[in-house]
Amino acid sequence: MSNTPFIHLLQSPIGWYFYDVNRHDIVEVSEGVYATLENILRSESDVNLEDEIQSEISYLKSIGFLSSKRVSTIKSANSEFLPYGLKHKIAHIALQLTQNCNFRCSYCVYSDLQNAANRSHSVKRMSFETAKKAVDFMLAHSRDAETVSIAFYGGEPLLEFDLIKRIIEYADRAFDGKTIIYVMTTNGSLLTSDIIAYLNDHNVSTTISLDGPKEIHNVSRRFAANGRGSFDAVITNIQNAINKFPAFIERLSLNMVIDPRNDLDEVMRLFTDYPFLNEHNIRVSSSLVDDMYSFEKTVSSDAYTLKRNYSVFLALLGVMGYISEKRRNFHSDALNNLTDKALKLGMQSSLPDVAAPSGPCLPGPSRLFITVDGDFYPCERVSESSQAMWIGNVDDGFSLDNADKLLNIGTQTNEQCTHCWAFILCSLCAKYADDNGCLSGDLKLAYCDSVRSNVEIDLKTMILLREFSSDGGVNNA
Image (cartoon, rainbow, N blue to C red; front, side):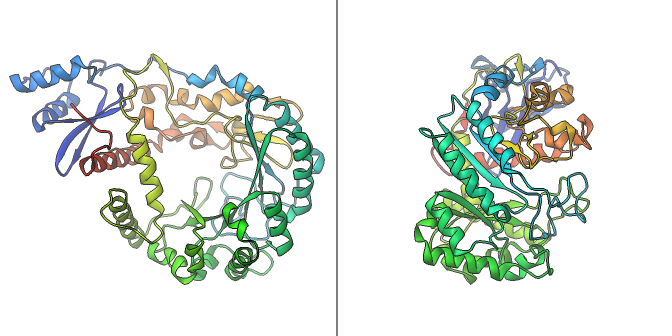
């Protein structure tokens, strides 16, 4: 393996390519070179080459491609920056104001029925003293952050609206002279006119969860008190916000949690049933149901997969300028981001000797999640019941050792990572190695095939965009 080119072969309907890990670049080759490289990857034994193919391969090597170099030591380049970042660049905190919620969503990771390895709903709430400590902590550790932000999170954060007001009042004074941004994610059911007016006056960017039209939304998102669906209450509040506070639209967005067991066209019917959501161009994001900590795993329906693929196809046509796509398409932004990534291909000459897979963020400076008790976690997506995810608290500060372990989760799978062609594009963070409070390399490896599959799809999409445009970023060697 040590002499084998560190590449991954890719085909499109009209071309042959390889992704060069050392150069982080996609290269188009002839069919003969592709077949030869395929034989080389299958075996380290010598492969007899025709003169023309030998010439092509020699040329590729002469300009820096087909190197066999692998990273020798797994260690994040950010390890050296981490102590400084934790001390001076904490720019974003997410405050868990309460563990209580007035909904009981079927897919919620805090549900007693769904929860496999996380906390459950409780009546615990953050005291103002803990919130004040959290704000003071960010103030003391954000000296080199030009802008800071505070996110209000739950449970349902609007159950603690009075606490939100006290925190904003305190933070505005504490950060006088520095730009501060407030954001909140809410289920939308408690958005009275008075609350909307306050959020609008204090520039609080607000994301409301709305999972589709009434028939789909109400299956999952129900009130805790009576089990009834919440759609009517939420859509009425959104309409009220738009009618009475038009400036609020600039800071309003929707988040749709998509259950892939549903038909995607039925999910998207929300925007035809309620055209005002389109007319005001409200920002919309989406994500699939997160079943990482759930007993029940979700499986995509055939209808969802078919419609998703068609949606991706339409988005591709839109990005390439072949059609003017008017309706909402969740994949258009992703494809535009992919185009930006394609333009960054070929920006390195070789892998360094010391590096780490790209998945983990910087624990703390990237997004510091603070629980009702003042404990620190790298984000709100990890388990609050896991000691492996804990990185400190408001009283004692950070545990640098724990944060560094999460940053360097690749050391749990050192051998596999150093020889993985998706090394630079990996998306696995420590969450995927969390085995009931212990970091497990075996658990992390269970997700690798899925990641590589997704990375291959992205690379093939970059190739497709390149083949049908003039600036897609694929190297024609």
